[in-house]
Image 1 (cartoon, rainbow, N blue to C red):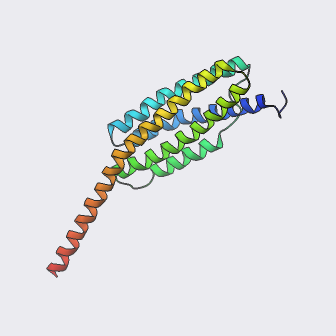
Image 2: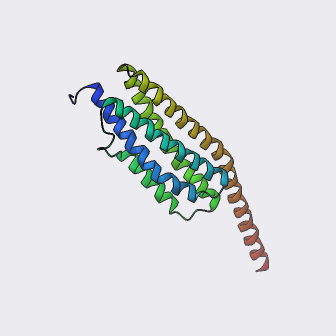
Image 3: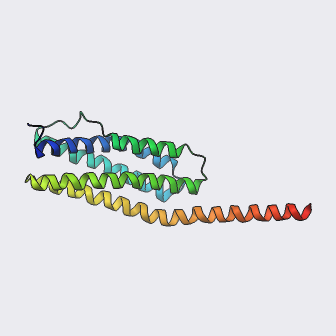
Length: 182
């Protein structure tokens, strides 16, 4: 297969997605463990199950192409996973940490959505209709995961902000009490 063909680019992009998904299979349990609220933890656990299905769908596509899925490392996902891991090392309060890991997870989802949109377009141009259906199914799940994270973020971010407001109010009260006592 020539390296300058759209089919080879399609295969390369699929390998990149396969690497991205397999990296996520390892990263999602860590995000779930770092989540302080049950609903967020459950969202990560559900997406882990879906991600395993995404890997299986990609393996189906590779099988029909007569290609092996490995051999390429998705450095984009590697960077996003590393960034998420660094975020989890920060000393944020529970609700602020939840907001931070939602943000990290949404960057991952947006990256995946872009990748799946690209390979869907290639599959369509190449007449790989069976692939288009599999890719579209995964793409929809990625969009749903992003929507779920957005819903959770609205709730969690409000809690994180309220916690900051309460802390700031307590600090002001403490400071004014200290000044009056002096």
